[in-house]
Image 1 (cartoon, rainbow, N blue to C red):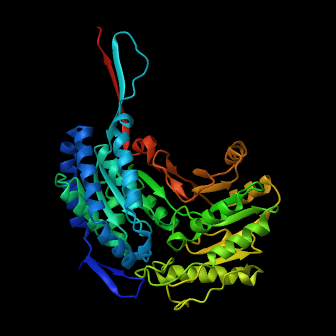
Image 2: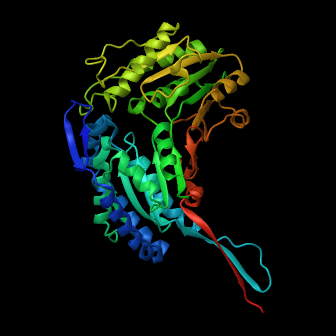
Length: 461
């Protein structure tokens, strides 16, 4: 009997949706159909593929009024923020627009009597395993460029946001995409691992936990498929002494607590130069105290529940451990239903923290942040690098040259200055250490969804 995927809404604990999962034979049939469709899809021009992909993005945009409350029911983000359509359109259309140039053959210097070039050849069947925290933004990073490069795509979305996968499928259906080019599937973990181990998939892109990434790599071992992994994070910020404090406070509070802190590149630890430490902490605490935690369907709520009660309980454990070790809590907000076993959780700001506390070392992925005082750039860099993760880091200063010099020393995939928690599609999105490997977005993202094929044609004999 097939597994059943049940979507439990964090709003009230009800079963919001449930779907039967495919068994391995059914999943293999989907892959087989996709592979049969791939040749015809790759034979289309880039402009023809762009037409389909742009139409699908337009179809998603037309659904946005329905998607916003649907996201709230699935993973708890307040409706006041309007969903993910703006970012989906920006990233998707950018990757469409650069495809022609990014996929052009590489031609070395001329050599008399020879025609030589390197083509970007599609990998074939690309599987996207998408997470629940940004169900459309994370998935579109790979779906659109994979299709534009001539691959076919199989999407397996997280159970927590399974309706997002169906929305993607509907958008491509409205766009008239040829059958088999895009497929949405529901699979259990065991079936997913068996499918990857079978060697019938050419590339998998996974966004999720470090443990999940290890399971993906283990399943793919020996198949020689390519793997893209965006895993955990513990993204730091460093507030320099010449900072515009008000600007830094406003942006870092949002970077720490938007989406209840459930952001891949959310701010989880902040290092503040002693010259501005007190002013920064006072402003940060004051602004954080203004959050309203409640039902995400209520327009007055600025912070909804976390996607699952166990995620909130992890934050409660991190806070309790930090307090036992001497940290100071500044918010202590009273929130209805904020108790063990509930996904509703107040934001928290901790000081007197250090790297002996899990809240400063282990991924939180929730509405809690620790703030440490530092005396120098060197101390800040050492602390930022004292982590198993490396997705983004942000620097807060008007001095671009100083920021660039510090950025060179930080072990991370992206460095921001005077902003955070944003993906620019013109820049590659990647990570180091336990954050994973591979890359998406920008022209480099196309390199991860194609393979190079050399043509060495001797014309004179």
